Image (cartoon, rainbow, N blue to C red):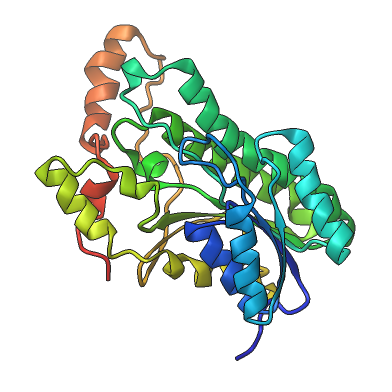
Amino acid sequence: MTERLQGKVIVVTGAGAGVGKEIALEAARQGARVIVNDLGVSMDGAGGSAGPAQETVEKIRAAGGDACANTDSVAEWSSAQRIVQQALDVYGRIDGLVNNAGNLRDGIFHKMPEEDFDAVVKVHLKGCFNTARAVAPHFKSQASGVMVHMTSTSGLIGNVAQANYASAKMGIVGLSKSIALDMERFGVRSNCIAPFAFTRMVSSIPTNTAEGLARTKVNERMQVAKIAPFTCALLTDEARDVTGQIFGVRSNEIYLFSQPRPIRTAHRGEGWTVDACLEVALPMMKPSFFPLDKSRDIFTWDPV
């Protein structure tokens, strides 16, 4: 097997379990040296332990790979800097960053406390910014580097009771595109993946209703390891022309998502009044309105 990441140093955040762990394992199998970052906290961000990160490291080493554990938080500027600095101190370089760390505090919007919104945005969106900003000067100076950020169809399409999570995940899409645009001239790439997998976050879906139970049965079929190959493919030199894109991976399916572009135009030479907007513009556009879809309304077929 060709080791597509031979000689590269990759940082994977949230790599103590689930999707992040499988990405770290696959990166190591592909020849990369890996910084395995994980706080070892509960799903809502409480607690903390070096155990999960170290377990991933030990599994990589047992298979003949090279990895080091890191338990710094992505949510703070200084600790995110330490994650990247560890890669430089231990391995002397950094070539790739996978922003996978996350937390979850679901709740209906009108009941969501401020601290739950802030906590999720701080880890997902601010965390992506912190780590990406930490690697950016090094990628710029070496004129190479790639970032992969995990987004979600909760933001791209929609889900109930996830205003904090959806906001953060859509913010990541904008952040990734901005990075791709700003750093293109330095040979630096940035892409997003919306992963579909049965993780401990997904396992929190209530099963006390027929709908919830049915969703869980489908979700259980989506293995976390299925996300890793495409993620690692984006980290390779062979994918050097791929940047600014939004992908999805669900079991054996890989998707390319559209990005917002104008689809209808209403023009009025004499300008618009409130009445004209109500009587002309909105009726013109209404046939093209998007319904209030949820992610499961779009992905109606079972994982392949």
